[in-house]
Length: 316
Ligand SMILES: Nc1ncnc2c1ncn2[C@@H]1O[C@H](COP(=O)(O)OP(=O)(O)OP(=O)(O)O)[C@@H](O)[C@H]1O
Ligand SMILES: [Mg+2]
Image (cartoon, rainbow, N blue to C red; front, side):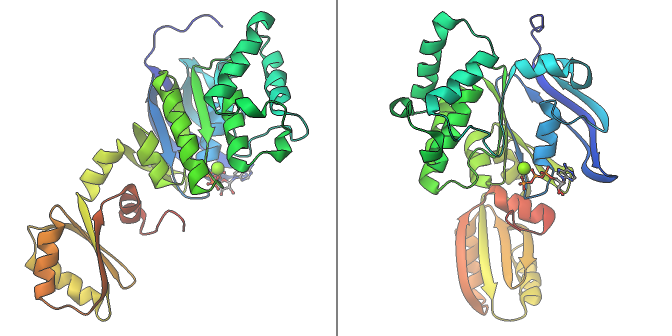
């Protein structure tokens, strides 16, 4: 494949549609990923994240729409594009019977890298992923987090122009997740373009420069994590669990603190009040002595954005 023109658009999807047996699972979505950014697809189970990713790495053809990856049409140049991608699938796809080093070597052979350079390259990648001491360990003996790091190291062998990570930390414990985040930040510093899917809002907020929120095949929102929180929620969220008549109290609060409440959302008996000055709002509310079982004043997050847009939390 000839060198790319210096295009800023690494992925360009327009009205991308995917149907399985007549059922729409990716519903006319459009987005652009530009060179050097970490772009996230955030959404719950079944949102269509993996399906979207599979179309991008030419594993599954779009039913309709336009999809350009690295400036080329995926339906025409899929094989060539694939060679320039690093992909970590949701299931790792490592050979459990082989050692860490053998898994790396096998992949390097596939890419026909210069033999004189391969050893040093593979050692460098394993060191980057903090796996240098495990070269001879069989993959089946590795922890979940180490397997994930190995899959990421392996995806970098071809020095890809675009790294695709489908749920890089699902199933890992919080410590292992933070270790992977740390390594992904290091990769980001090398100006590589990353597309990642996740259903962890914290992961999206930590790693992504921009993201789309996806649900049931649709893109609900797009933007920088902080901007989305600002736009939909504000700075803070005051959560109140009300023992009785939550609807009535919601109306009362909304009418009494118009200038402090930017929005509100009631889920069961928990009232979420979006505000730019939580302390002031809490003070005012306490003076009204509502029947509160608990209250919590906290910073607004992407989870609040998702909740507001869909009426569900991300794990639902
Ligand atoms: N090969 C397939 N044949 C039929 N339906 C499929 C196929 N692959 C996915 N689906 C359906 O498409 C929808 C989206 O699935 P997808 O795997 O893209 O979601 P996801 O956002 O990646 O979810 P998860 O967070 O669970 O990985 C689901 O309803 C799923 O059952
Ligand atoms: Mg998936």
